[in-house]
Length: 486
Image (cartoon, rainbow, N blue to C red; front, side, top):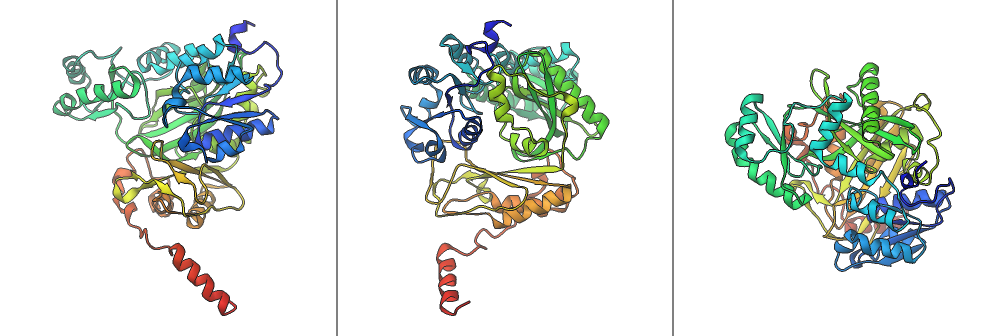
């Protein structure tokens, strides 16, 4: 086995002596928990704004990085030098920040530190969406009709769209997550949107290259979780339906998908494994597809990292994805085969963000004055806040992931609604009441949703954000009850 396959880790199957988490917030806490169960000491890095964060308190060692709130989390040389200095053997990148930067695993490898994730080449190959499309086409994985490569100017884009027919998507070649993406339903819209897509792509990914694909109206966004070890073993752990989105950003994820029958699930899962093999993939990753109204599916992209929504797959399979990431990076074989994977029940993840839905989901920052999380059977909270925590203004607004499991779709929806009813976050605006309305919506409960669901449901904003008692009123009510002996 080539030494480089382990990206700097010595070629044995022993566990790491110390792991650094090159991230923050709830995903850093999640990785720390997995490491503790594997008896691995952890190291956190943090900015001055994150000094009081939960993950900083939970790590065995913590070091401030800077300057400023962002730059320290992105400085690969400073992070790797710190890791080397304090005896770290592996680095987990989480999601976001450096997780899909191909230079990061290269530097780790050069310094003799294991990067817990796929190889630099795989990250680079899948990060270039044009190249990823080409590789998937060669592997026999269905792709959307589109340009063979990047489109150099608006005239070339117009020529393609005239031949293909509208609507079309303009997409950034160098990234995903909805950034740089525009939908054009006419030539006028295409001309208007082309330059802005290039500009956004350059700002987000450092390159203005874009390409075009045929746009599917109201598809389902379905992704398959894969795990692959260093010995050629690849499995998928079923799918997640991520169709409840706003501006291409996921709000709710469910597993399993309500639209897939066993035949379609089997074929899509096999193509997800085929995609991973074509990319020479190792560690945890996600193959994303669009499914149209005719149940045809097309490769969308491959995320070369742990996903925000990985928890619902863990709840229905019983497989700890983060622990598997660490074990695979340490050289351990996967330990099970595709036929060993069992999906039990249903799970929903609600992304609770510090945002004001009634103000176009504008981020809400400040001190959390009250925090009460739900509990009970089948309920998991992956969070980053607590009472008196100050939500900073420099980062993504996701503060808590509510993950709920049930034996049936009806049960998991009812349980999620109950949990959102119990959940209280005060001091900052949150998406709790908005998400609660989704759980009550007859179309959602009946499985009648796709990526256009949110746009078609303005009535979801119909809630009273002041319907719950304030802290003062709650305190007065408690005092009165105590006085009268209730």
